[in-house]
Length: 115
Image (tube, rainbow, N blue to C red; front, side):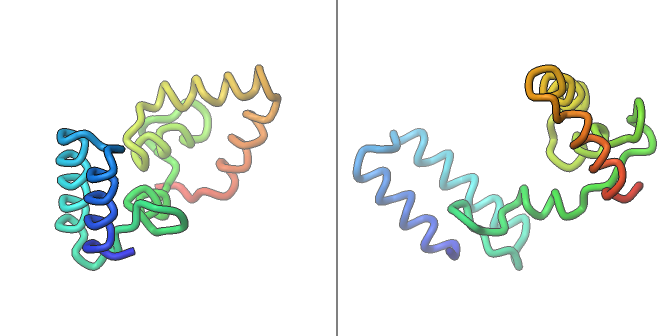
């Protein structure tokens, strides 16, 4: 979906009452800022597109500075903008509740290259 299609979709949602005036303006500003920040990027906020988060995850690297074990959480913090301690907490919670947090961490440690 290109920029004009995305703005048209936002306008339709606004007309249907799904978005308030303030939400519509915020969403439109966000789409336009993303397009101006990356002029070659096809801004796609709907299913299956390469949005800004997808581009950040393509540059995912393990951190050399912000690390406790392998630097995975520090690298995720840089790539996503979420604090490293929140990533660490999430891995601990996944380990305690579902049992697979450590496995995901180790896989990321193995497959994500270092800075």
